[in-house]
Length: 450
Ligand code: S3P
Image (cartoon, rainbow, N blue to C red):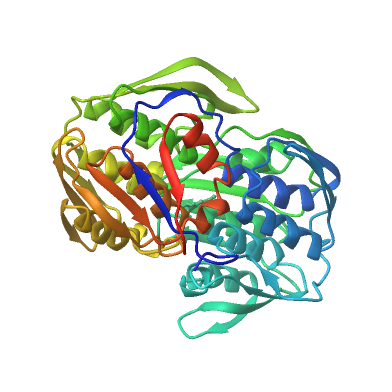
């Protein structure tokens, strides 16, 4: 089942070359944070290029439930009239975050130090994901959480009456956990300190500073130490959201594996905490170049050009790179299947608690398509079959996971026989224009009868 409707079975077939320019949507991480930080400022934040995917729309609706005014002006232009730090009102209904772990975890953090209660739920995927990693540190501020067995949603958070600032070392490499703690720290008096041993995406830190919070970052022996001084007045901003590198990954990788392709993907955010996939692809021998490199809105940006790359070879992807490409392993495993030799991905156990268990989802689906996979709890190895070497001819289960759905469709563009997925509905959570964008480049992609 898709997250919001009937299943949409789809099939991808090998066709001609992919050619043209692919304008992918705005960055999902930055879009969520724009709405949340806008809601926590006093006055009007203007957002251009917001990702209008279901995940972000659910966060926008949630911010309205907490009292902010969220207005869609059309064509990706939105505004948020915020209520200020500590100004959230108690929602009078359950907050449905749909498929979005980022949405629910960041919002829980943002409300946990205000004396209100809110009940959160999501779709079958989100309601199966662990929330303890966020509610444990929120309890240190004085918030309480009552959820289902195993710390799962639906869950009620009772915000702290008199929050106390915390010093917290994040036990797993997770930008969602780090961000939840920082957002909670906004309404706690004094210094909230978050320490991460592995650097994860730093959009929350960059954006909090941009909104006027007093935040400093130091690299020490303990790790990366982020210190936030609580109870600032955040100043509304005008934000231009860069285009999403995690979405760019799909047309880029599809072009690399499809004969004769040459695709330009402009204006992609290349924050180093997000760009691990592109380094990996270049190490594999991909014909991938960064053009027109520049800085926009405090984030590095470039135009990506990807051409068919028949000489790609398998490599070992080091564990220390995992956080900077955590959402890209599914599509990397498709590229690896079309490369020559073995690609070993290490330190990837976080993939097991994403929208689906992404190691299992990719391994089972690729095996059904004729690819040999080895997996451990923390690694995945793909035995490449060379350019267009994947037999295909199978249906993969998308498991309510947008990135699994798109990865198997991209695999189908280069496989010998078509590859189908049971449900393309979840693609709308992050990349609602995927189908038209890929067919616009010349891909053969159809919707099948349910
Ligand atoms: C995100 C952080 C990552 C990533 C997710 C978006 C964010 O999750 O997988 O798609 O915007 O903070 P984790 O924090 O669980 O690693």
